[in-house]
Structures are given as structure tokens and as C-alpha cells.
Image (cartoon, rainbow, N blue to C red; front, top):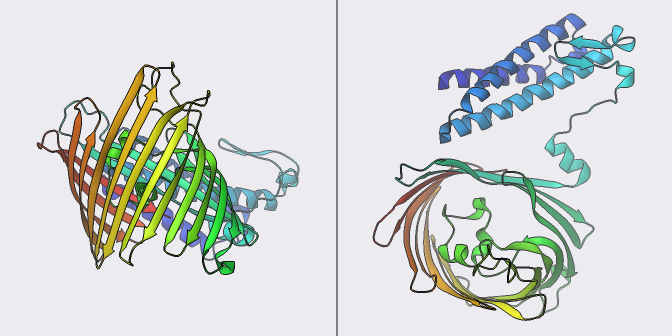
Length: 421
């Protein structure tokens, strides 16, 4: 069955290629245009039926097949729209009557606004907007017979960036998590651009909007295309949990040192998030992060954050320290975090660390990570992870990770494919 998919993809690509190299609608008469429309509509119908059939298959291979077929279907639809537009403009009867072909109704050309199809490259050149993004899918095997959906989409994001003059920039990141949401919406301004920096100040930036809280080191790997492993560190999930919210921040660069100062709306409390009394979130939170380059290969840092309730009382304190060592083909990261929540009738103390090593081997790499988290009341989590990754081609990576508890119970296997564009 998979050979039929490749045949359809090849045929759709061939039709598009022929159309792009000399078989334009301007050089065809109406009979030729109608014939070409019939062929394209037939191919689109076949691909749609194949996509519907693949919806019944939840395997990772079927997921990738659907994504590729959807891409070619969109290409076919764009060509159909273009031919329909040209047909409306060249038809003598289109100026007088409403033409209908199958389920598609076409207005006379005099009543239709001219349509131009802009490619992403044209959009970037004309508007100055930089377009990028990434997506990844995961196959997770736990060995449990009760696992419902072993294959799923993990992160999907499209980012738009627009320079505003010489000092400012606007960034918008749209993510998909069962519905489209705003992941990042940030306006930044260079108070002191690097080119104007003094001897002791290398640059200063202020920003406002929605962003990831600049706490610790793992925040630099929140996007899946920037992370070496498949899973996130356990201490992050037990404390920060990929903290993202609306706020303001400022970053200051000094010789060998960077300081981030920020404030955010709220923080999801871990002590009892299902209880509305006291509040499930703090009213406002703020913090500071420091990074210092000891040598070219060694960087150390620390972070602190506090959260307050509407009455001004402190409810959350979060501290952390991290170390990153990079030399030759090795990258070693270790990070410690401690979360304390103190509310009326409720208190929580969580602390832990992870130590991770990554070894680059050309287009391949291997990694290992140890997680140890104290969830309070004698509840410890100890995990070990081993895995590898490979760059299949530019912008496409494959990763595998085997994760198990310290006593090798309930092992998990992750297979992840990541695409960046």
C-alpha cells in the first residue's frame, strides 16, 4: 500500500512541475484548461481518499504519510485555484453568467478581485517578516497494554519576526496544542545596542509580552528542535513546568556576565492546583537570572524567583543553579532547583537536579541523563535516560531515548522525529 502513496506523490509532483515549466494557463485555450482542471481534481480526490483512510491508522508511519500527502494536496489545491482564476479571466461567458463546475461555483471575472499567490520567500522579501518554525511527533512505548495513543504530535510552532527600525523587533510564535494558541508575543527594544556599547556594558534590551520565564538553563531548550533529548528534565516538570506567561523583562550584558531581570503575571502553584482556596496561582512573580563565563568552555549561573498573592503576602520561592561545560565534542549540563510554597494551611518543598552529557559524532550524537527529584514526604523520583540522535537531512532529525526508573521498572522508549523550517 505504501508504494501507491509514493506513486500519488510522484504524480502530483509531476503535474505541478509540468505546470510550473511552460504549461501555464495563459497559453492554453479553454478546452485545455478544462481538461487540466479535470485531471487535477481527480488527483486531489484520490489523495483525499488516501488521507481519510490513513486517519484510521494511529501509527507513526501513517502520521508522517498523512503530513506528506496533506502537503501535496495543498499544492494541488493552489494550482486548481490558479487555473480557476485564469479560466474566469479568459472565459467569454464568465462576464455574463455564473459558471458552475461540479461543486465549485465561479463568479464572473469582473466581480472577482484579482488573486495572487505569494510564496513564503516573496512574503519575507516584500514585508521583511522572517518566517520559521518547527514540529515534532513522538512514538512512546511503555510496555503497558492500557496505553491508548502511543503516537502523538508533541510541539508545533510557527514563528514570525519583524524588525522595527534599527533597535526594535516584534516576534510572534503560534503553537498548536489541540487548538491554535499564542506561545510567544514579544516586543523588544535595544536600550544600548551592541554596536554602541561602552567598554563595561556590551548591550541592554527591554522587552514586554508573553515569553518563557528566563529561569535556569533548561529554558534554552524548551523548543523541541533545540533540545537534544526527547523528554524534559524531571525537576523542570515538578517545579517550573515550562513556565510561560505575560510580563516584562530586561537583559544586561557585561564582560563575561549576563543579567536578566523580569516580572510575570502569575505562577501555577504545585501544592494544590485543583483547590481554589487558596488561589491556584500567585498574583504576580518576579526574578533574576545570572550567567557568568568562567572560561571559554565553562559557564555557571544562578536564578531566583518569588511569587506573591493579591494581598501582597509571599507564596512561592524558587531558586536554582546551573553549570554548562563544553569542550571538544562534549557538552555537560547539570542543574539544581528548589521550590518552596507556603500558603495558609498548605506547604510544599520540592528539590532535585539533573546531570546530562551529550557527545557529538558528526551528524550523530549520543546522550545520557540522570534525574533525581525529592517531591516531599519521602517521595523520591530517580530516572536514568540513554539515547541517540541523527540529522537525517538539513532541518530533519530523528531521536531515540530509553528511560527507566532507578530500579529498571516501567521502562519507556521514545522515538521522535523533528522538522525545522
